[in-house]
Every structure is written in C-alpha cells, then in structure tokens.
Image (tube, rainbow, N blue to C red; front, side, top):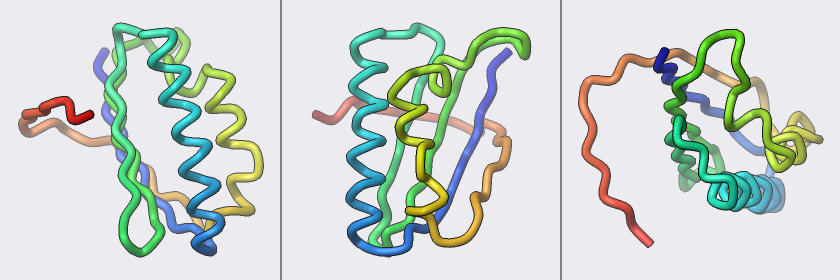
Length: 104
C-alpha cells in the first residue's frame, strides 16, 4: 500500500533550522546505509527556515515504517518541539505525476 505524506513546519531560529538540518541529514545517512527498497524521501529547507518533508513508502498498516523506525529518526524527533515554531502540518497526498533526477 503506497503511502504519500507531506509534512511542513517552521523552526524557531536559524540555529534551530541548522540543528534540524543536521538531524535530517542523519536520517538520510541511515537510509543510505540500510537502503530500504520501499521508500522515497525528500526534505526541503525553505528560505524562511521552514522544512517540507515528502515521503513515499510502501508498507502495510501493520508493518514497520522504513523512515520513522530508524535510530536517526528517533534522534531527529528528540527535542523537535523545542526547535519548531508552532505545530506540524502533515497531510496525505495523491501523486499526480513525478520526474526525479538524482542530484548529487
């Protein structure tokens, strides 16, 4: 079952955004090492210090989420509410189309 989620939130300061980015990079490093075959994940840092996460994962409701089950994601979540300004807007999304070229 393909799940598509878009998550957006703001950070409290440039320092909080930098720390948030470091932790997100840790999630990507763990995903790169583990290479789960059922996930695509993109995180964008916007000019205003907010972040947008776009995830595509293919697992059943009773199966482990390949992103949120990583140790690096647990570290990312730790203190997230202290780095964040306001709440988290997370919505399910419908894929209209995609074209992705891997950029190094």
